[in-house]
Length: 248
Image 1 (cartoon, rainbow, N blue to C red):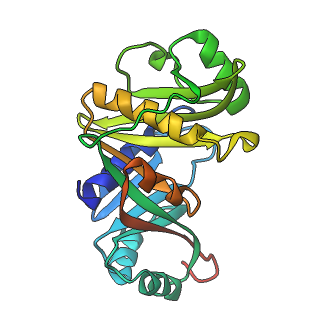
Image 2 (cartoon, rainbow, N blue to C red; image 1 turned 120 degrees about the vertical axis):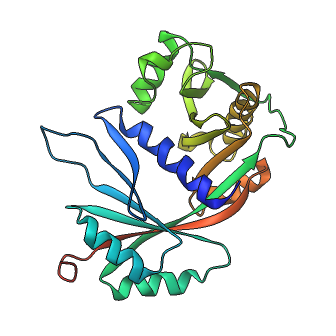
């Protein structure tokens, strides 16, 4: 999978989770990829996220000025052979502040998936399990996705004595690709194999439903886990916000 395709998986997958509270869209605006609220008539519009790939800072700024969004974050995504320090300095010189960086990973599901049976992981396919996870993680799954067949979003939960202690979501974005969303393990159970068990169960079912590529973004701590699960890094995302006093 190319980085450009992985970016579209990210945009579609992340965008789906934003539709839970209000219609949301992922689209191209000129040379930009934009994630934004759709047709909002009431309430404040959420901050847009603009994804930039294959553009210099000068080119990206020109495109953003033509688009003229009210409020936005800028996510500069680039290949691993690009100088990340130069990218950061170029956007800072245009009046942007760096907020963080995440690594983009992909996994080919044609490669072996090691099962993990240490923990009780199951897919949320009943209202009982859906209610249990909602109590600890709020909105995690839509009603239409609560069943045991293929679905736009599949939620997997690790239970300890019927209490959720970890969860992860797989979101189908294309016929052959899924986005990994919201992997989380509660503090007392971290570094005990819960995350690996969740991911192995999810990936096994992804493959059963014909998925070839799994895509995710990882923080510095998460980046240590995913290579052990067969993922490889293909890109880096740096998130910036405009400094109001310098961006007009």
